[in-house]
Image 1: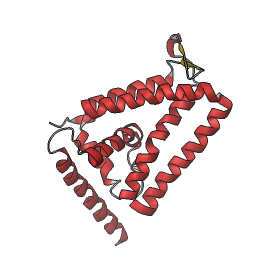
Image 2: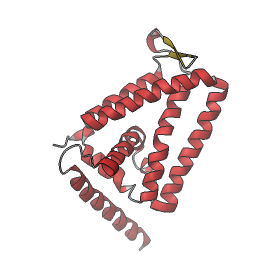
Image 3: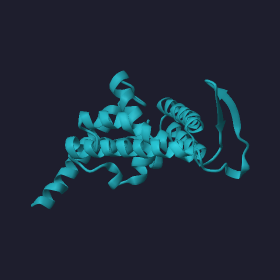
Image 4: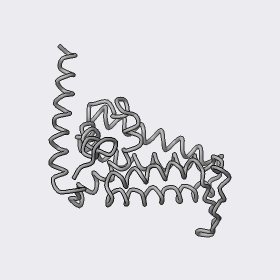
Length: 202
């Protein structure tokens, strides 16, 4: 059964899906959304620890890794909790991926150091955002969702591309009938957008 309010998965996924109907644009987002999150966590690694929390140090592949409970960790925690609240199964997988990104980005940050890390982050962000804007402009022919709902696009996009991949490749649904319900809402959203676009043209 669907949830309501902030955790209304049907509503949020339909909003996202209405901006991502073109298959090429969908693939572009599947490839580029998670690297954006990863590199955000990578640059946030260099922020100070919250409330003087202790660091965790260990060795991985011969490299010393230091986990810092800072803003990057806080982002990871918030994203993970949100995703589990959306859907326990897919959300738990998304939360594990977020945790993996946090740990892996900490490893990369230790390995690269700030002077090189920020350059890697800048190039990756530019590449990924450019790819997504091309996906929308060339293939989707509709402005990105972030122009209409920044919080939804930034906070929920990683979960939605994962859920879309799970649906596409494994036929996963949070509950029976979810896909059919969401598709109907997506069509309604798209029809409403096309009507508004036509009125502006006329």
